[in-house]
Image 1 (cartoon, rainbow, N blue to C red):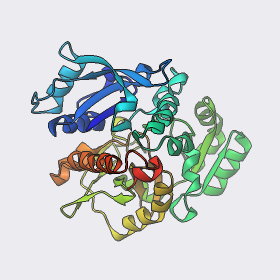
Image 2 (cartoon, rainbow, N blue to C red):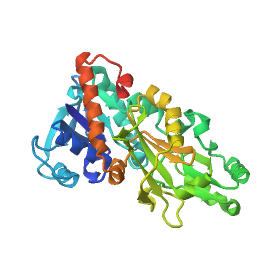
Image 3 (tube, rainbow, N blue to C red):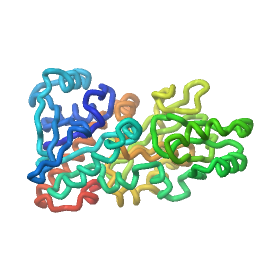
Image 4 (spheres, rainbow, N blue to C red):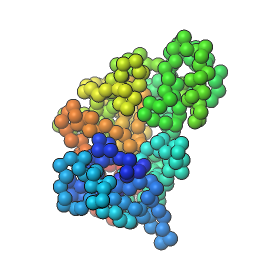
Length: 348
C-alpha cells in the first residue's frame, strides 16, 4: 500500500506525535509511507496532484519513532515528488487552526487538494467534504443537544455578559483554535471585569460561551472512534484521561495537564453511539471524542492525537490496527476498481 500523510510541516513533527507513530507503523508493515507538508502540494498542468515528500528507505528497520523521524527529517531522507493520484490512501493529519493566524492560506489547502485527489479513487481520510464542514467549532453544534453543553456563539459582549450572569460559571473560548489557547473560566466574581476576557477571545473571531461542567474538575477523557465505532482491541479501548494541572482549568497536556488511565463506561459508549450516525455520514474515519461527565466537550476530527498515550496505559499498539484498517480499505478499492464513494469508504 502507498500511503501519504499530510502534516502542517514535516520539519516541525515530533517523535511522540500520532502522525509520526502512524507513519512509522506503516513503514514497519512494509507499506510505502510518504510524509508531506501542506505547502508541498501542487496541481500540475497535466491535471495530476503531486507533492514534494519525504520517506525513508524501504526495508530499513527502525526500533522507535525517534530514529524513524530522525532519518525522515535528516539527510538520509528520500526526497521525491510523488503523484498523489497514484497513492492508495491520503491521510489528512494537518491541524488547520495551527495555521489560522500565520499561514491562513494553509488552513483549507489539504482538504481542497484531497477533494481533487478523490476523483481518481484515492481514499482520503478523513473525508475532505466532511472536514470542510468541521472547519470551526460550530460543527460541534450539529450533534444532538443531549451530548452538548449549553452554548452561545456570538461577538456581542452584552450577550456574553448576560449568558455569564445566567450561568453563574461558564467557559469562554475562540471558535477557531486548539490546545487550550485563550480559554477562560468565568466565575460570578469575574463578571464586572469580563471585558478583558472577551477582548482576548474575540480578537480572532467569534466567542464560544459554554455552560461550565462541574465534572471538568476531574479532567476529561479522550476516546478514539474509528470507522464510526470506539476503537477497541483485545477488550481495551483506545482512550486515556487528561487531568488538570494545579490551578489550571485546562486539561490539555501542553497546557499543564497530566495523563491518567481511562475507564470507559456505558455512559461513554452511549455518547459515542449518539454521535456515530453523523460521523459516518461525514466520512470521519478517525476521531477523538473529548468527554466530561455525561457530555462531550469537543469532537476532534483534525489530526486527533494521543494514540501513544492510550498505548501507554493499555499496552496495545493501536497504530497497528489503524494502518490495518486503511489497508483493508485499499484492498476494497482494488476489488472494485477504485470505484467507490470516498465518504462511504472512510467508515467501511
